[in-house]
Length: 229
Image (cartoon, rainbow, N blue to C red):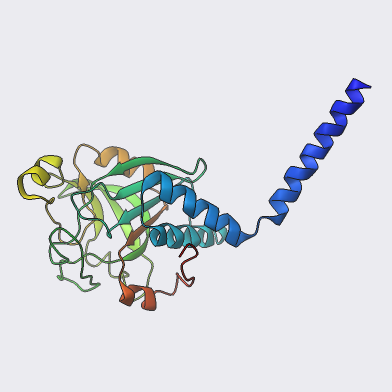
């Protein structure tokens, strides 16, 4: 009798779980993920929403080989804050949070202006797919392909890559209030570049976000209003 009762409980529990999975809509699932990550990481909610939305699209279309990690550079934050987040999408939690530089002509403490033009020395917003590791003038570096036409698709021509830089460090923040700036690359601390690059290499998604209306209107990848108000 007890055995039969236990079997019945297992069947009911399994049915309930299956029902819950079926009745969780994509929008509800997205809202839950955005809320969870925004809370855990303290990332701008719109940055998380757009990043997850596009991550799911590209994952479904087979464009992401390294599907484990999603990287967000939240340029709504000042460069004195750790605003680069690498998120483990299987565990839905951050595995690394660190400093990241913006282009020297994009602003000083905050990145405010953006460009896709050669020699603008500004950052380009939007979505990138990471490539392979190579050794260049900055040492170990990671290729980046901008996938948004007219927004960041000149990344390769502009030699926009992820690399380590001595000017991305806490000591400089204490001295002048902000880290150094790049020629447009999302440069990271020299003592973390190896870990970062090896984690996100091989066709993972990187999203560089800022609250910029021109980008929002121009981007063809993001098409949803804010879900969380």
